[in-house]
Length: 353
Image (tube, rainbow, N blue to C red):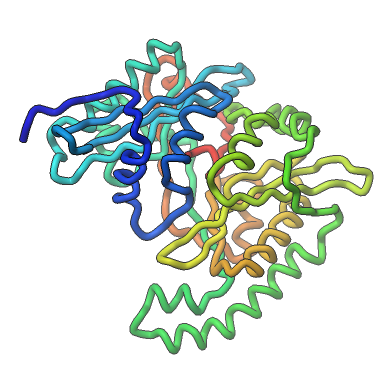
């Protein structure tokens, strides 16, 4: 093995995307392309991101990135960043690549005055962050990855291929029951106007200010940020809003269409509701479920903040816990306060790129 070369702002996004894509097996929630890196790193209203790469001669063997985020912590606006895209070629693991790249990212954050660094690492990256690099899991931010089957036959057949015929027959019984459950729990109770929109309304800024008062930690959801995150981005996102008859915005949700084991999946990527109203989020979820069914999704996946006001509703709609989602942060001054304080968090799948 030759001596490794570490670089900042490697410009070949096509090559970077290809390297990252080689690690993406089984599910595809976000597009992985040169365009996606250009969008994330260069068009972010929160500030330009940076990628750090490791090379063995002409071979790309390691990657890490930081994405600036505008965050409110205890009602104070601070400059934060998400660290992610930490991948190392399996032939080069245990050579210090991961630690070096994350160290470069942390140096960049310090130089920029970024006060809070967080991430949602995969199982391979988590031990390295915790054991060597000063990151800790935020214990008060406990997230369950939950899924709601819409067409259970294909899902069961994929999970249990030897029982494919039985799985599909069972799906013929389960799916009508789920449709009835969704209608009774949400469809019958919808009192507001729910519609699909191409743009976030101007009043979403007022909605965010109202909701943010109830939380100690929340990524700022300005209209500019939401437009960048869900409208101009490379992913297939669909926005639904809930309004009163006189036009007051009560909430929104965003569904991103992706895949899991070659099956179409709707990812409930973001949502914001005024006043913790179960009827508002229920009406939005009902329309999202109908939309996903019409568009061939076999299930909906979401992140459920454990103990949140909407957790019980997700369970009654048939969302099942699949696994934990650890969220980490760097244990520096601001991070130490987040780790030690009893904060009330607002966090969705959309807060992790």
